Amino acid sequence: MKKKTLVLGASANPNRYSYLAIQQLIVNKQKIKAIGRKEGEVNGVKINTTKKIFKDIHTITLYLNKINQVEFYDYILDLKPKRVLFNPGTENVELEIVLSENNISFERACTLVLLGIDEY
Image (cartoon, rainbow, N blue to C red; front, top):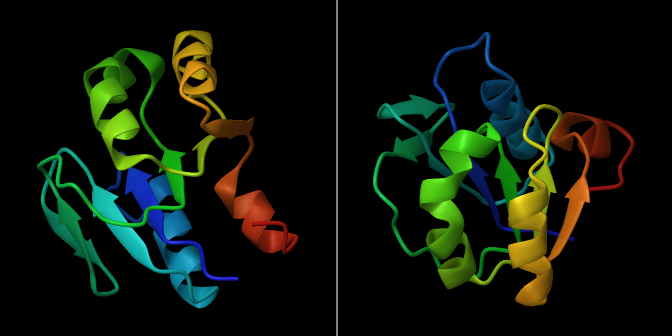
């Protein structure tokens, strides 16, 4: 099943995990939106630098540490995703509580692993 995914903390740097995630999401034929600090592109996926309100986001996969997530709390809630993935290093109990209070599910899981084992 296709799950429209927002990569939050996206990077056009091939050495970053968010870059690898975008590539694997493409391979797995998922619809992708991306937001990062710098504009760029990964295999045709444009990286936006503003908090655009994308429609029908199923999953937000986080590549921001918990300090950098704070400015996105309201934005994440506004998108009303079905779930948020906390990739390794992005764990944030405060945001998990906010998500729970708003009936948004979350997982502490690696997007690359989930895609690799067909559990995305």
